[in-house]
Length: 310
Image 1 (tube, rainbow, N blue to C red):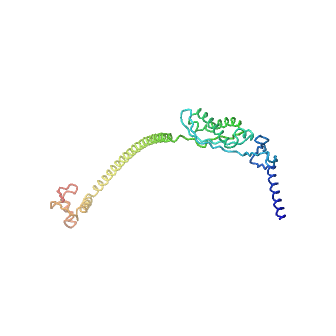
Image 2: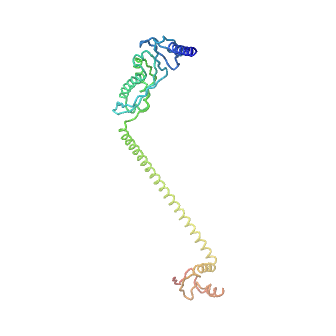
């Protein structure tokens, strides 16, 4: 029984010592800073990480972040200089610079975020109102946000807050305005497309006209050259035929008769000729008779027969 009482007493003493040590010693993390108070009054600020000492049961410890914090404000509408509405959602990066002032003015992080959101909204509204809509969403957007961050940084020092940066995640038009803007943009693009199409069609017509002109000229020159070549060929052929006929008229008449036989013999044709037609002199009998007939009849070049075909 005494042993149990001894063990319970020892355990109580260990727990009491542990609780007392917890009240006396304070572990400060490198990611935080601690404000020591006594019955709600400020005593000191501990910034260095490590083990610190405080009065047990009298001093209270309020821990604050040393890291950079973020305040993501809700979307809000702003009016630009040219009376256009803009919807933006700014985000602020900040840290607690003076824990005592911070504790006295805003108490905690939620209060700090509320104050910062109000400051950012006010300064951003004033800055947007002094610039045109195209400037805010264009190339000067970064310069505008730097100006907003500078003014917010000056005012935030009153709350023990150091503002690192202020940026806009997204800047857009209100939903009821977006459709009209998109329709106008679409109409402008269609107008540009029609202009490009008309210019392209005009250029295509010019190219077609030029090509047709060149084609007509080339065909005319080719036809002229062809006619000249045909005339020269016909003249050469006539000269050759005349020379050949002058050298041996009988042989020429014989060749022409054979060509005529080749054209009409063996076909379903009917020829009505006189019995003494020169066409039959090479079909009448032996060469002697054909020669005798040739001496009595006119040449094949001046036929007098009448021909009919069915």
